[in-house]
Length: 114
Length: 113
Image (tube, rainbow over the protein chains, first blue to last red):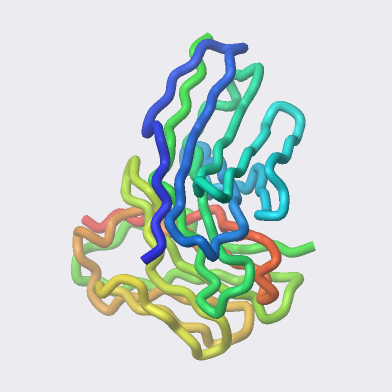
């Protein structure tokens, strides 16, 4: 079945440095790739997403890249700040599917050191 | 705009007691609805999803059940809670057109004692 692998499981970076989280997916029919940020005790929040017709998308300090051939996609956070500390989940989904499920990675706990 | 409501925020229940968690979505029609569970420090486990009224798909055999009595209402239930049912329960919705991702509710922290 569909599978999304996410690495690393934990990541600690110095404030101001960049953080990169990588994911791979198995279902070649996947064409929608959202990223979620979950703060302690809260539900996950969508922070950025990318569709398969583009290779990169950027929103201020956050960017996502997609390599459909290799089935890889990554989240890049530049100039990290303390409020970036959270758990991040990548996910993959076919945009048009009767199952309508989104498959999540196992999560990355990002800590920003002051 | 669309909003999702999930309640209660926290719940402490004894083993063997029943459970009912409710989720409602406003501002949209024919949403796809989902229940997830998250154990402490762990990932998101899909429990149930629904693409329409009365249509429930179960992902994991367990002590729980789900129902969708109305288009924008999704209920998670149990007749007798187990200790292992403790966790953070999240409701989510997605447009029926599937053009966007999930929007999650704020979650219910369930502790079975």
